[in-house]
Image (tube, rainbow, N blue to C red; front, top):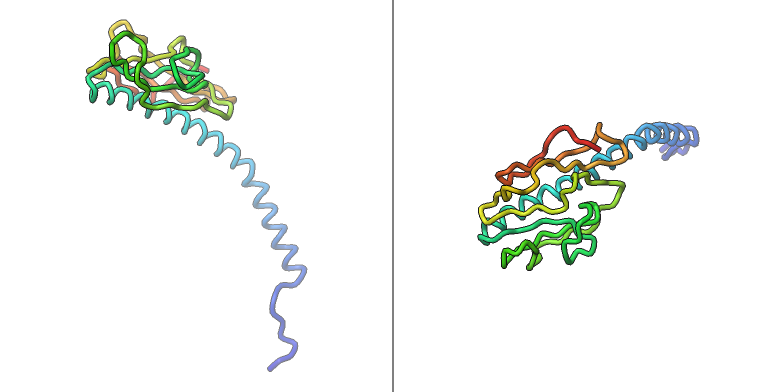
Length: 169
């Protein structure tokens, strides 16, 4: 058996390996920040879109109007913006106010804003349609990068909520 046989790394090999890892991380870290912003924006869009779909399906299921509205206290429709949070609530007596809360969404964090042009609530009738005098249109979900990366949710008169185009931040 050879006594001079060594196992392990030399100091030079270790320094070179650490240098390669450092250079690789220098390229990866800035891209990770963009990835996080994109995922946060997509997640915020999907949360609102899913809850709009939930409200529509619950309106048909219960045969009663269902309201999704901006709520800063997560207990009642307070108006304002969806970035403060929102609630999905059943209007059991058809008076235009929510009576039974189905779902609560806390305030959105991470520099996300919702531009809804005065639309702080959406009401689905018992067929899942928007009332004829309802605000249809779009809700733009934006971050600090502006229109280039923004997402849009479109509401049709039939109550269908879908991803749209042409955001306005």
